[in-house]
Image 1 (cartoon, rainbow, N blue to C red):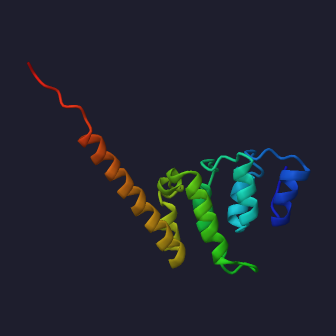
Image 2 (cartoon, one colour; image 1 turned 135 degrees about the vertical axis):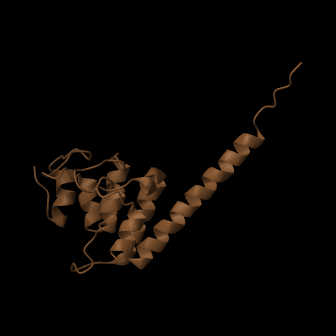
Image 3 (cartoon, rainbow, N blue to C red; image 1 turned 45 degrees about the vertical axis):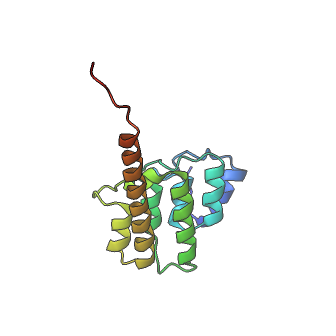
Length: 152
């Protein structure tokens, strides 16, 4: 089943019974990829709540986060706040998305920079920095709490 029009996303999920993880077209895009592509916050939220795999990949844009950064800003109805909200939803579901790369080896933050989307770029870079800081603190805590071995 091919789902291309934005309005078809909701219909496919709820009326036609598309499985939320099902790939819906030849590129392997899932309903979540489509919702991210078109900036449909409510669809993204519903799909995540229904159990869609936020780490799902397709043939071109391996992550839904990368797909969300390659939106068409000239598209009628483009609303940058929607993409910011989608990024927040996705990252709260899995921060591993921040490190996933597309077919060219670029992360979502790098794609946002490439497509000159300063708002998304800054948001993603801040999330990546927060993730790094959390990992560093966890490693310091692990080292600090490592049991000391005494030799007799």
